[in-house]
Amino acid sequence: MLFDLQAEFKMLYIRYKRSKDEKLFWNKMLSTNMGLIEDFRVLSIDDPGLKPKFTSWPQEISFLGSDWFSFGVESLLACTSTAITLNKSYMGNKDMDKILRKWKAGGLPYLKRLGIISLRFNDYGERILGMVWSKLDGMVIKTDDGSKTATIDLGKHWILMSVTSSE
Image (cartoon, rainbow, N blue to C red; front, top):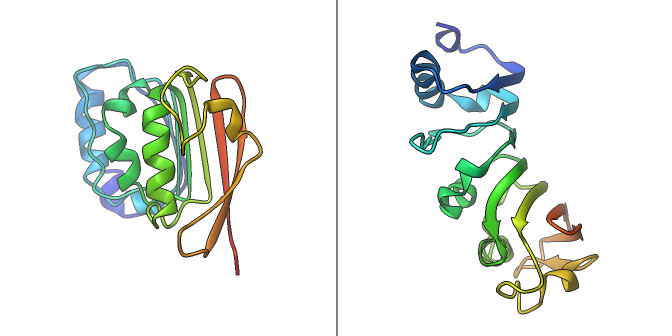
């Protein structure tokens, strides 16, 4: 009933614990207009059987325990949120390469900030934009049409991409 009200939420924070009621709530919530939520945060979804499909996206989305989100980079590439944070992700260099190439080609048009923490990011994995992981630190990249730039900051197993308009 909460979502039937079509009310806007400044922040919605969920701690998912795998109960049957929570799965029903989760599925109902995802079928509603998530665009009414400014900041959506989920703490740990430890349920390999749950493969959520968003019909719309909140403005900002954070998953603190986002290993489930890595079931496909396609989910991230379909996201229309302006800020995306994924902690404990299973994404690796190959996934990050796909994300950055898609962004450069004009994908993720609303993105202003992307932060991903994953133990799979490293200098020994696939190259990202033709480079080893550590060479991306401090790099500034542009979209193919030159309309946006992104600054890349790295840690040992995390990436932060901050996007600005070039105009």
